[in-house]
Length: 150
Image (cartoon, rainbow, N blue to C red; front, side, top):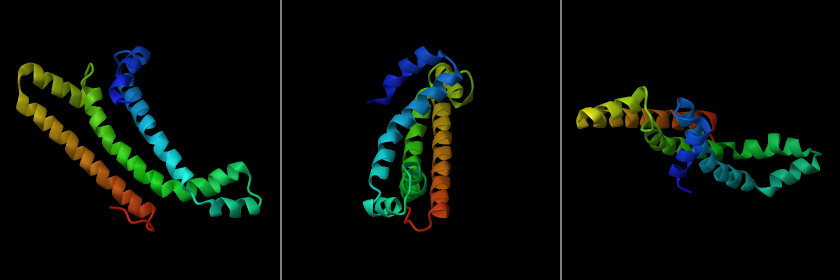
């Protein structure tokens, strides 16, 4: 489903506020991330679950002590990917009724015909996104040193 379809929905729910933008980004990231997390958890080898059940683990203990710990490195990687895609959605969210921030600068520059300023704001957004992506990558290497993260 294209992310753009959530804009009218969040406008109806939250109105023309900053909450609408946050809601739009949350829904978009959640919808993109949910199937990836489900796939990652479904990919946990059955042997781990069998051992835990043999030791008498409850359903909650299986989730907390087996499924999540085994899948968390993969989930971290998916979070990094969705976070990266979310930066593109931020630009989309910022052009709807921008009152302040980078979206406001884009709108103001557009109304004044300062195309170079629009490109400057976009470059700033890309620089922030790249820096955040590198922080996610370093965080993944620190949290999960046993995986090969690129």
